[in-house]
Image (cartoon, rainbow, N blue to C red; front, top):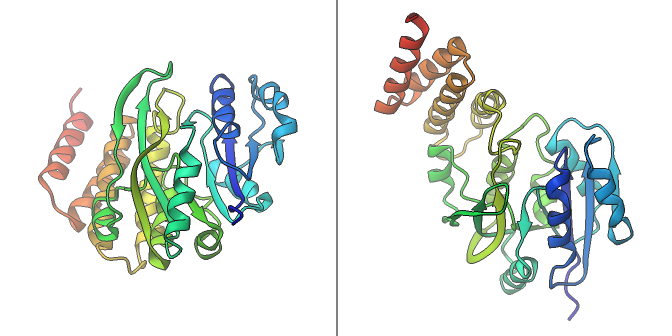
Length: 289
């Protein structure tokens, strides 16, 4: 029986020093058929040169200004022809049999919409840090804690999941993949597997490694625009967790008034000792010289 075409979109911006390793890790997967799409956001580093070296092996690529990672991914998925879809950030790396292993699970369990596995955190030089183990897809637990259990690098989903839950929210910076996973989970099973599928790189320029102010604003947006009125179990407590995270990130960014505002909203919805402690810390920094 013919295996499904898998489409992997690689969004990239100013990650030229990591991009080649990411591309090779997808192009050299022990799986066929496979198409790779690269959407670069008009990078000014060596990214276009790197992409050009692999252009004849790509289904499509572009380098033009975009409105962020979610917008880049939506452009890529609009070009994708696969029955199974996924994306890989341009600073991450797939394990050689990642796609084959996930497709095996999707074929074994036709009711499942999305599969994810383990990733290994690495530093910018590739040094091993610690594993990010896949936790069970428990919607209420995830919403209450405002914590995504889906390990994104290496995860794949059926086209049907995209049709039900896509496109990605282009207003989101940090949490759009969490929103997507929660919507997919309302439509059908989302399951983890114990296999290590990817290397998840953390460095100062990565989305995960910096940008406190952007993260803070995205947590507020997530609470006010996604969770509010979502009907998801635990949504009220989840809004409290989101405001708590926002307050912490606003504090890190030096936006003390915004931090106080977010923490007050958190304490009103979900009073916790940690929230009270963060509020006291923020208040002290606001009034002390």
